[in-house]
Amino acid sequence: MKGSRRHSQGGSVTIVMIAVIALGLVLALVALDVGAFLTQRSHASAAADAAALAAADALGRGLGASGASSAAASIASANGARLVRCDCDAFDATVTVTMHSRLPGVPPIVARAHAVVDLSAESGSLAPGSRASP
Image (cartoon, rainbow, N blue to C red; front, side, top):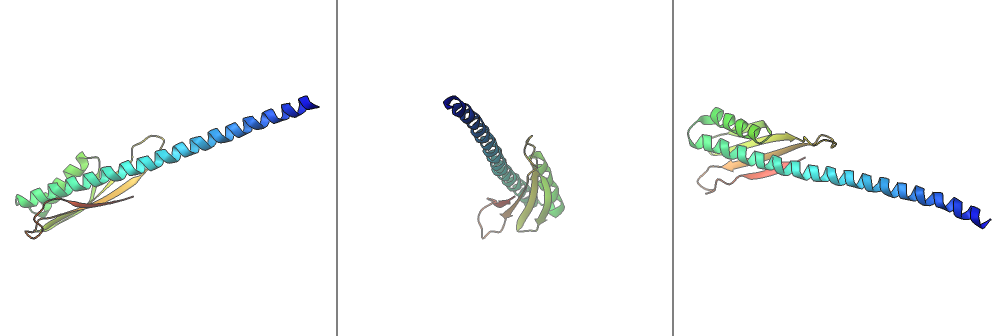
């Protein structure tokens, strides 16, 4: 009778180990998704900043709103993003870009980022202020 008890408990350890391994895989996939999201958001923010600076540069060179929009679209594309909106006037350049994830095995992530460059003399700076969101 003692032998039969040991044999029945051996199978339960196998089931527990399979459950632990499955839980570990699920946690690894969640960590991969979170990492991909954070990376995507950071890249979108950098692309928006670069596009806003390119638009501000075009405005500063007197190319007008259409030239600024074209420059912003070109820089956004070079950074793997797509220009969604570019609002430019004499004193600021505001751009919004989206970026789609390209990681295999990760559900598609679309990051949207917004950046503003203020060209007014009051601000004294051409540093972009950006905001990224999923």
